[in-house]
Amino acid sequence: PRALRLEAAARALRSGAMSASAVAAVYAPPAPPAAGEAVPPPPPTLAEASALPGARAEAALYGLAVSGTDLALREEATLALLRRARAGEFRGLARLAAPAIASLVQAGAEPKEPLLFATASAAAGDAETAALLRGRIEQGGAVTPLILAQLDALIALAGDRPAGPVLDRLIELAGTGDARAKAAARDAAILLAAAGAPMSPDARLEFARLDGAAPRASFNRLTALQAAADAGAAGETGLYAVSIALQQPQPTAADRAAAVRALSKAGLGADARAIAI
Image (cartoon, rainbow, N blue to C red; front, side, top):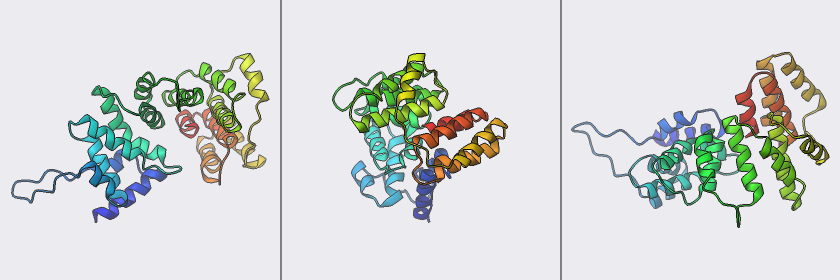
């Protein structure tokens, strides 16, 4: 039944077991009927799609986001799709929504929430669209210097772009503000540094002074991870990296940074950037 296929696809999207394009194929509305076949009902309105249960709502919102000529409706459906994300689910939904966001930008739309769309595009690996949207975001109100620096870091990682100035800015922000903001800037700096962003001598000194969360992985596991990377054993490095950065409970930025650095050393740069993002 279609309802079961939709639920399975929604779970697979969130776990990474299915690509966004494969999930999109499952979510796609039925093809137009052939001559003599029954005509399907018209697509739901945005309110009707949002009110559907479970993955049916997600599929209906996706259909509205990628079809039609009403840019405002497509934007609202894309926003509703992204807002369905719970903890740990944003990147999966971002990958699903990224083509719709890119299409809106290419069509000349002026999104009401460029920050959310830029973040989703960067998280999905579309650095070009994210950078275009970044140019429309102004600092002020809820858009703090830290939020913009985090977005710049995401865009740099997504596009494998030079990020030295971004890292310098994050290190600077890690020394100011309240404890939560400083921790967020510090963690972003740790991951960007692990991905290979260069630091100036002054930035290295300030980076060394930051208080960082200790890794949860044992010294032995971290040593085995690095040894595998040093040996050029890409498959073994990948297994250790996944177990440390993704599978253990509540990995810290230090755990993820160790995985990022090892994956980069083993020649798995795209996987390293994915974990950093």
